[in-house]
Each structure stands twice: as C-alpha cells, then as structure tokens.
Amino acid sequence: MDEGKKIQIAGLFEFVQATFPEFQVLNTSDKWLLIRNYSRSFSCLDSAFRVLRTFGRNSNVIFGSYTTYLSWDCLYQYLPGPDCPDQSNVEIAEMTLHETFQLCVSMKNAICRCNISEEEFCALMALAFWSFENIDVCEELQQLAVRYRTSIIAELTTRYRETIGEENGASRIGSLMCVLQEVRNLAENLTTSFEIFRILGVFNDDTVIYK
Image (cartoon, rainbow, N blue to C red; front, side):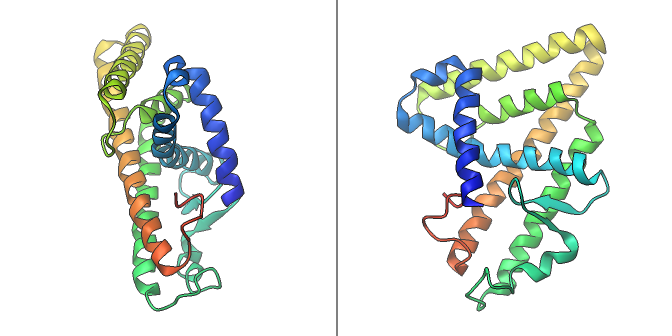
C-alpha cells in the first residue's frame, strides 16, 4: 500500500503541475501542503469511480489502494487479523472502519445519482484540488484557489448553457457541489480514522498513507 501511495503522489505532482501553471512557481512547502491535502480527496473520488466501473452501482466494496479492496462481507474480519497486533481497542477501530465504509458508500451513491460524466469527473478533480478549507494557507494560495474555482465553475456554466440550458446547468452544478462536499466529508473522516489506526498499531509514523 505504501509503494502504491508513493507512486500516486508522484503522479499527482505531475498532473497538478501540467494542469495548473501557477503551481510550478510555489515554494516547496506550499506544494507539499496542497498535494498532501489533495491526495485523500483524489483517492476518494478515484476509488468511487473505479468501484462503479469494476463492481457496479449496487456493490458494497471500497478500494483501499490501487490493488486492494475491502468488501462489506469482510469488514469485521480485517482488524482482528495479523495487520492489527494491538487488539485492546479493536472494537473502537471496527466502529471507525464501519463509519468510513458508510461514508464511502454515501459518496458513491451521490455520484450514481448525478450520473457524472468523465468531463464532470475531471472538473470535480480540479475543484477538489483547490478546496482546502480545513487547512491554514497563505493569502496567495487562497486567492489562487478562488480564481481557479471561479474559472472552473464558469467553464461548466458555459458548457451547460450550450448543452442542457442555463436552468438545468445551474441545478447540475449544485449537484456536483453536493458530491464535492461528500468527498470533503470522507477525506476529513479518513484523517481521523488513520490517526486511530496509528494508535492501534495498524499504521506507524512512517506509513506513507498515514502522513
């Protein structure tokens, strides 16, 4: 899982630098701050779309990485296993994993309801990168985020006006914002969940996915 996360982070740096020119001139600490914040939102969206394509709308599966997934049927068989050497608080960990699983399903269902296209998926990926209300950033980054989010929404508005009409387009954008909020909720939950798993010994301070 750690090796996969390293590959993902390297890929995110390439993707973001190619997509947003201003990112290239940011200092190293700001770049890492944004990528670290974005990596979980990206993983949430990417996982949901891969679940839909691989297992279908009615599946009870979540991807833990590019090559591992967890099904609802096996949910309570994971933590009592060898990957969790400290069993003293396994009940709390199971509750945490259960909550995370439910949020993953909720986000997947929101995507299903919207029937998001690949173009909209790309827009969501971009909006997610410039959404960092949960971290402290400098004024320069805040202004850059506002400018990019405004530009992305404007492009969507123009696209919808030409295809489904202004009123339907406004409704569509509202639906996408609801999906984005689901992504934020899940990403924030993962931060808390990973901290609990670290305390239990499932992760340690050097685990890349925890960082």
